[in-house]
Image (tube, rainbow, N blue to C red; front, side, top):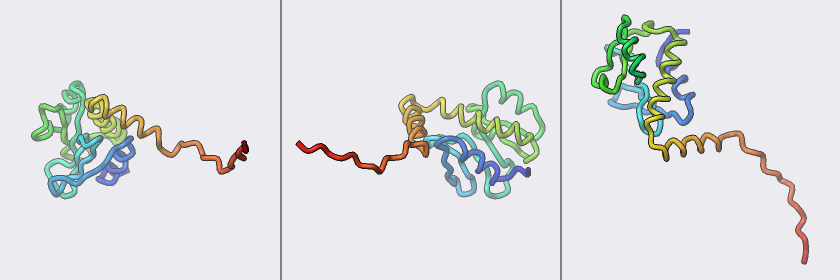
Length: 138
């Protein structure tokens, strides 16, 4: 499968409570509770995708061809992919999930709990019984 904005969008929005927002005019950002965990471009640019990673992965990834420390986000340990073939699809999917998890973990405890609770109120509700019980008359 060809890696493109639609693939990244579908994957990132599959994460619980993830949202998207166009920022800076040409970038599509993916967020959890307002905090960005990935950015892709909507127009040609020097890099096509950036995301947060662990310190270990940051060191490993930035040694690979086509992957650089993300401009302005080096201290936060973000990497930027210069080409769409810099990483295999499966590895990239795992790294985007890791980015989501890292950002989620930095949210306040109250926010994390609210997001987890909101997930539990999804489509798996018990159906409401439509049968009415007869009232007892006194």
